[in-house]
Length: 128
Image (tube, rainbow, N blue to C red; front, side, top):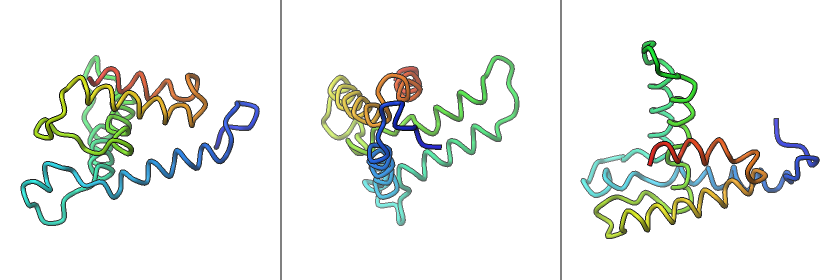
């Protein structure tokens, strides 16, 4: 299940990656918080719901369901480090992109760099 030491990834790096992902459970969606929504969803809640929606969506010609599920699961993964930045936070789109890329690079490195992290990098790149 976890990458072996022969892949250059230590078990502690995998644990560090998973610990970062745990932050998504406690990072509340900023828009919900700003609007005073009681019990706002977390980023993890959002990612999970999007993954389920992609999984159960009807077949649509030309749409790759597996890719959609992957996109739904990882599209906000960098928010484990940078938080849920909205257009109303005063952060330019280019700065947000830079911050998220840096966070994603760090997370991919924990998984062994390009080989293990490429799925996250490529999936996130198609969303922006």
